[in-house]
Image (cartoon, rainbow, N blue to C red; front, top):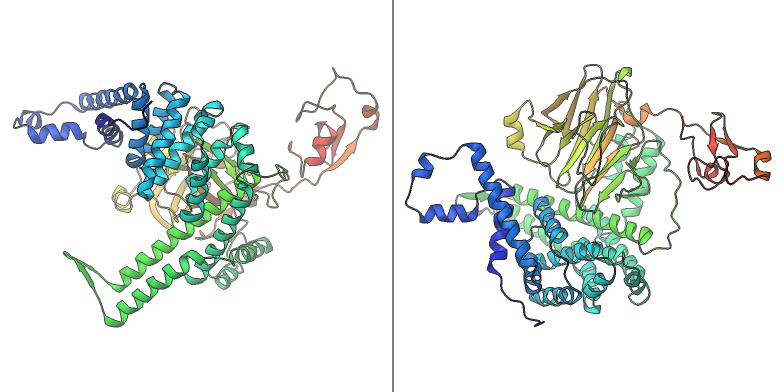
Length: 586
């Protein structure tokens, strides 16, 4: 096969048609035809809405089929991937979803085709385009995940490995880390990364740099409350979560982050110098009819600082997770966190990434993944219950409440609010999602003015069981995003559903609130007292093991020979009993 890439103009046009129709934007071909046509009959007599929708869907299907036809050819597959290096909008969840869809449903490429994809993408990146570099790492990540095994070995080259690691050093490209994790799904490549590339050492060095950058940014920019303000907030009398744990948590975070921001230091100092000069000279920059004041310059600088901080925090989390779960020694600590309320996956097939305290969660799959809090609120008890979620990304997320009957399936794309057993706030559409339907807010004008949520926003979830409704606050502001709640016999649990590459931090009351709600209790206050279990081993049962006898209900690999005290629950084996911090059957 010739290493040169044959141009396929239809790839770009078909791709743009798909995205435009999927996002309810004008079809570029129809819009162009309308400009060239003098016939105004279509404008005077437009087709009915249902017919227009059907026509648009037909056009999208034709565009998809055109792409499938192109990717069924070796050169066409290569051309599509090279086009995606510039056309992919990695911050658009719809764009990412369609790329995954095309990779999944196109004909499986040959090893030689995949080799040429890597060569063509590396050649494309010689132009030093930052966007193309990010998009290329996403493409490699998807391909390595889809074709783990011998085909992934065909994609890999030493030059690609050097590029991915260099992207981490130079650009803090989180997608290059995800690509390395995807290649590590192939055992031979994982061993190569560990032995030949020294990946663990490289990631540790990047993590050290990120730590330094994080703290220096905190010291130089008023992104978050200072340590003194945090201490003062945790000692006010009206906070529902005022415990020593809150203070210790912030002290620990403050000390951990107190190593940061080498790469941003010069950048930030230049911004501040420019801003000070603007104020001193009374300078106003005019572009057309828009006047940029010094206050606007400072606001823009602060927003850039926040974005830099969030990007580094996400990378810090991913580096730690990768070192622990992918390239580490796999000696994972399975003990539960110190706090009683935390997030846990819905099932064992979940691929969500959770922090050590299980309050921070990220989804780097291309499915709709969900997590649920360990503490639920019985609806018959009444009261006002509250938790907060800090958004580190701005994609599609659904955050709300649901019973354990909620259908939460990553394969089916079902999240919280998609059935009658739960309701949620949709951060992308900025509306409440319940029973599979999108509910408009009570103040639609406010919502349309506000728009969707962005990274750095804090979503507050207030469940008022005295008045039977739930309200969602954005940065402490009530935008009329409420829904009536029907009481049931089952408890309501805080539940979070995330699309690909979304990342949040939950607070159920073990830390200080960003925005407190008067009279509300923390969700963690609804947790029952912990049952400090004592293991009583039935020695008589240990002496004789019957392979056909009852086995542990947790591992099904050892006999039942333990009773937990004081709850007196049994049905488990000795090994599993010693791993429990509290009884699971209470």
